[in-house]
Every structure is written in structure tokens, then in C-alpha cells.
Length: 215
Image (cartoon, rainbow, N blue to C red; front, side):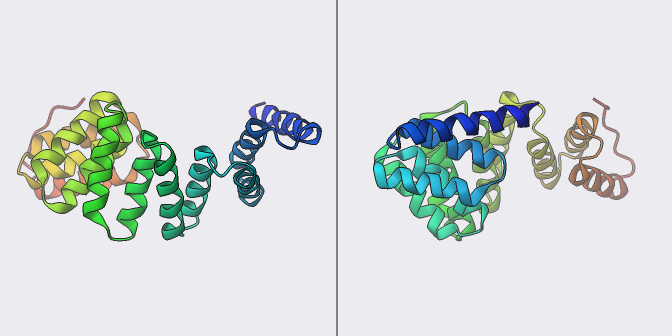
């Protein structure tokens, strides 16, 4: 049903552009709809055409950045996200995504700064709390990493990766019972979540006498 609605939306956007090729919203929305269908090359062409019509379209740069990032071209993705932020500095999804691609490029300090910038703009953005926590953990700042994992879970209690990562970080800090409880909670939410299952098995094998209350 949803697929049929997307197809119908695409048809309407195409018709709108046949009538008025300068309709920016129709071209942007067509690109987004094509992305939802996995028609990446067509979507990219839409966004590129939109930028020829309006080089100031932050949304077009953003979606092109996401396409480049998904293809593993992190340098080009970073260029697109930087252009977004030059146009709209408060575009918090772009600053978060730029942090992600810069991590892939090995620019960890800049990534941390971008996640912090994102959270100053959007303190409710769960993904940025998770990304900052992971970056801080890699940098050895465990205490602050724990706080951001906890905030991610306060905002989204069923965030499986946050439950798993926080659980393992607490294990490294010697807080084994808390760790096991978090991993069990992740598996209660999704029994097929393999990272938590593997980590829980490892901890239980290493600490067989540890008792943790089941969620």
C-alpha cells in the first residue's frame, strides 16, 4: 500500500514538473520519493538539477551528501554537508552527518566538535548523543561517553545499539551487573539482536557467578 502511494506521488511530481520545470519543491520531493524506492541515480539527478536552478538549496546538498556517504565517498559527502552548513548553520542533521563522515575520514576531533555543535542546536537529537558517546568512548573519555549513552536511552529507551554499547562500556568499568542487565534488556526488546547476545554470552562465561536482575 505504501509503495503504491509512493508511486502515485512520483507520478504527480513528474506531472507538476512537466507543467512547470522550475517547481523547486516538486523536484526536491521527487528526489526524496525516488530515494525511498532505492532509485538513487535518478534521485541524485533530481537534486543536481535542482542545484542548477537554485545553488542555495540546502536540502538538495543534504540529500546529495547522504547519497555520497551511502556510496562510501566520504570526501564528497563532507563537501556537500559543509555546503549545507554554510547555507544553514543550524541544519543539525547535516552537522551530525558531517561528524559521521569525518569519523570515517579519521578526523575524530572535528567529529566530536560537530556532534557537540549538533546538540547545542538540537539537544533532543538522539542520534547525536549516541554518536558523541561513541566518539568519546574511542577517545578514552568514558565518563562523558556513559552520560551521553544514558541520555540517548532517556530519549529512546529501545535504542538497541545504545543499550549494547553502554552495557559493554560499563563492563569495561567493572560494573558487570549493570552491563548484563542492559544486554538482557536489549534482547528482551529484540531477541534477534546478535551483538547483545554475543556480548551477554561472553560476560556470562567470564563472570559465571554474577547475578543481574532480568528486565
